[in-house]
Image (cartoon, rainbow, N blue to C red):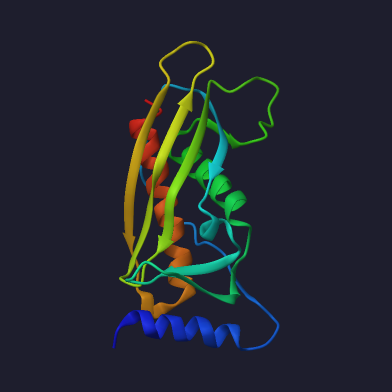
Amino acid sequence: MRPFPFLLSVLICLSACGAVSDRYAVTSPQVTQTQAIAFRAVEVRDVSLPAYAADDEITLQAADGRILSAGDVLWADTPDRAVALELSRYLTQVTRARVASSPWPFESLPDARLDVRFETLVAGDDGQYRASGQYFVAVPDGRRERSGLFDLAVAFDPLTGPSAIASARGQIILDLAVFIARNGLR
């Protein structure tokens, strides 16, 4: 049995269960890595998601490229806000620096500002959760500004349903934080 039809049927069944939406919170993976960076304080200024990823509905990409969703299987938080907070939390844990999402909550200004623009952020029916895009590190004091591309994937079990997608998203945002710390903030 192919995992996509099963997962799609699970999503459809969940959406047909009535007017009550099922909401899934992203599972935070344990952070075990650390990375020294060149900054004491970093603001995650902007996280830009594709329209399907910014929507509250949990989506799945079919092999033919279609993005499918069941209207009543939702993220527990708005994805743009949640991804910015997750990225800030993971960068704090990985780097031990002071990291916060915009608007910057401290009196002293950050040493660097991070913008992340996702081209893709989607679970595939092939069991891969993918994230690709570009990051930008702005440095107001004249030090070298940086940018880079990312293309990451995390395996998940599509037969497990939306909870597996939520866990995979948590892991891929952690992987992105480690990637940006190593490649953009050193």
